[in-house]
Image (cartoon, one colour):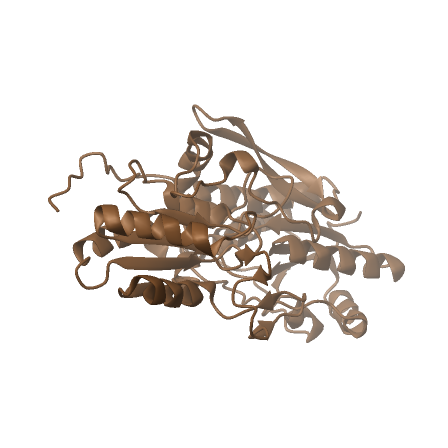
Length: 398
């Protein structure tokens, strides 16, 4: 494909991660290096900006600006959750042709992989030469065919530290508000919620229960775990995924969805609020409901050193893949050594990734007391980056 005579378009898509801009910085830097004759454009608010013709030239971004960009939260180009419709294709292709775009990079998750495929197929049908290379990003860690996704390590670092801290706070305030429910993101997978167990070493430590979408939620099992912890230690902490499910479906689905996005994902009333009300009713004590929301994907001081480095390298690698005339692919992270963490970057077909969900394997799933396996902690440890806080020396006066 004659990329040397064409230009490059970069898009950020879906929910932000703490390192999505690191990937963008890697793309721009290597694009400037390997394609010195090409212009680099950025889609404003994702694919919607392309449809609307809003793709400013960002070729001349300086090295100092790129260094700052790599550390910034949010998505510098703006993002969106837009599922392409048939009538989107004509204006989208018009924008690509008007700027002679021959390489399209989309930083996103499994839904964004479907977007990339749709654009590639539309260009092929129009006989317009276009390479589409997606780049992985999600705090949910639910992209298939990769060891992990850029963004997960930083969000997991935040959740693991936050859970430990909330536990210490709940124990200290046990006379007034002894129980806390933390609701985390993750959509249909429990990777992020399970990361909350990283600092748990004894039965006393938080969390005392972890609810994930892969395991059918039982109110009775939940209440047994919470009440046992409360009676034994004077406090209790539960961490639940935003889409935990009972036999009847998503918790909170008793009411209609509060929102449905363009990809058909329903969002119901918070399961954390539902469980907080349940605890207060059953135990007659105050139960806090904590929902970090976008904080878990945007706190600069919680960014994993490993995560930021890998995200940047993924960006650089995608440009090299384009240079090698690869098409309809996405870079993947391959773990080669877990004792002394080592990895390489491979690739997968967008067709094998689009719309698929990587669930938490059974061997990593937590038990009813909030413990997870040593194998999961071994998997998670290098992704959290450094430093890892020493909690071994913490003692209890209460």
